Image 1 (cartoon, rainbow, N blue to C red):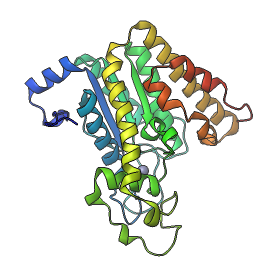
Image 2: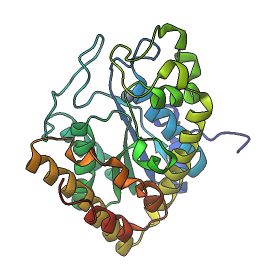
Image 3: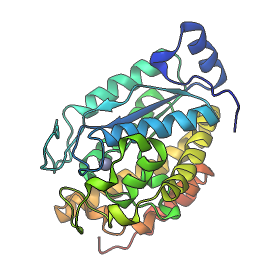
Length: 294
Ligand SMILES: [Zn+2]
């Protein structure tokens, strides 16, 4: 693509570079992750490293400023070297939500006109905390704010997310191959503390590149477009995201299982394409057509 990659990481910018970046595209990309076991073959910071790397690529292509990733969230597996800041299951976040609320207010005060809260860590509780907080803050601040896990942007590419399995390991082979040691996986699955296919035999850089390309193209388009949305587009976007949050909370509440809305995650397969194409009414219709049995 571009020969000289633009500087997009907030913490590396000089004030004049931040000024220019804000003038060009006032979107903040906020990568979220945690410190969590992802198998013997992967780095412990995978979720945040992955989210950050995807945001950097997207901002280099589309514009926007990438914040340093947050290493801490809701839930985490019961495995070594894993920090669980908030226990799951829960539908209430007492640490992540107020952090994000303040951060969004600060980003608006500093001149950003759109925010993407992009989580690479995704138990159901984390996903709901992020999307719900994005919706509430979008209303309070009158700003387009998206809160989503990365795989929701690429469900139609076959990427449904996992935990240190074929999907996340493949993405790391593309994004940060120096941090993957596949030979450390011995024997056959199930491997310790990870889930999703046979990470040793099925992971590949090609697969990771395919997912990364789809995610980054959509993220880049959103980053570029979101600050330009008019009031009508912002309203339609908000209604679509509100519908997503309401469905997830209602199903969780009714069934007592926070994962209820993800039992048929394939129902949301068109979400990433519809979102990037700004077809918000179609997302709302998609949510409303979720099979009633929950
Ligand atoms: Zn992960």
